[in-house]
Image 1 (cartoon, rainbow, N blue to C red):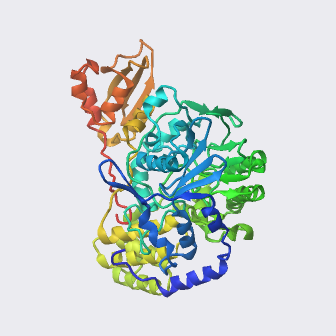
Image 2 (cartoon, rainbow, N blue to C red; image 1 turned 180 degrees about the vertical axis):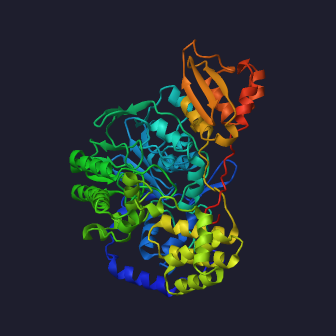
Image 3 (cartoon, helix red, strand yellow; image 1 turned 120 degrees about the vertical axis):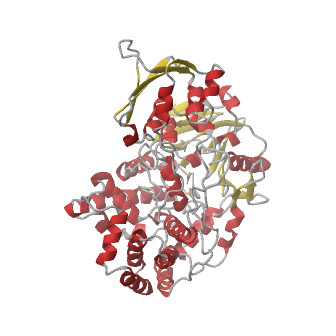
Length: 633
């Protein structure tokens, strides 16, 4: 990374300590990650139709070398394992594509074709993975697609393995857990702009690949760019134990809502004694709350579903595989793997609750939270993606919220006002900068970062604190075992030195995803854009008659609030204007950027009343900022 600092003696000492504390002599994972290898692609790069590179696994070739002092040795080990690329045999008639995306694509051979579990993030990577499979296993048609859960890297590449026409013609089912469609689009719409900006930090999207930059994400290398899409499910899984037979493949589902995703399910293949754990049990500690932001996950129910998986499926399985990283073979090892994952999430939950009920706050609990030795010394329960610190605070947040009960924290000043007061309290800029340099030299990077953050937020034009903060973030990155923490620290350093890099991630606002939005979700999203103070004095009532759904949806703007609901009551006050249009047209003109006036002129929209009321509403909608500041005011 340009202008980066060298790892300090403090960081080198930390790494030496880890090399003796962790079981590096255990090479089981290296054998497992190589098990069943069939072939690698001719090149690690995948390009789009326009020639742009959407995926470059070759950029991580440096991970085959010796661990440098700028990377935590435990993370280096995980990163090297995560970057393996190719087609792998999991068990009889079950194959995986790994290293073509941040996630895995699994292929199950049926009577006439192949059933795909999780078709990756973008069409280009999914198509390339399917092509490699077909090169070695024959040109089998895709006879079914299963989405394990509602996160984009597990369904966005579906049009790389099938077509909308084939699905609509009934040539193959698309199977997903109940609630998938709602959650798949909601997460990418309601808080999507802020999440995407922060995700660029979490995944290190703008960072160079290398020993001073990103080494991966902890559960794969990175998120590809390319063509994102969504084909809605045709079959919902609504109950645990539901069985479907697809192309002769018998599939049993375990619903796990509220775990790693709001809508998620595990998959058992009884005739192959194979268990897919989706993203509920993988070779790392996962996030209870992601650094990018999301709803806090339920560690308690997560652990309970893992207990259910052991009881009902793992004890009858010869292999467990997931939608990230590599499988585990042998019934005893399968059971132990899931049980240790269960113990990890359950322990995080229960011990956090025990201590918060003794009066400790989240930061206190997280600061001193040793795991049991069996978990501490197991590679797949270490924090490469999630961390103990972040997860403990997330459990606390789920139950107690942001407020820790101390009235001194109930009404603190916001960041800039607080920073200026802290700088004054600390004796002014020069005195605080001296203290920050001293903390840096002593290896107290956490304190240095806190002091420097006050200086930057008090005066973000002052270059000395910015430069030292960038160096501080780099030291914290070099020591981080979690890839997500490393990426966050290095991204902060990058922006302090070079300015904002915005949101260089794959846009999920594709036409197919937008078409999945319900009428309610369209206006829920619009309501979040209303600039309340600007709209205080405005009042309007707009009816949207959705002709292909035989419904009328009323939208009222009053007191800066957008209220909306279906109605059939002719006794309601008349609307100021009524727009009659189809659901696809609604999506096109309100979300996809099509010209509203042109649609009206062409007859796609029928207008009754005063269309100026819509213009008035649009005038108080805020523009989204995909480049908002994070490490500066």
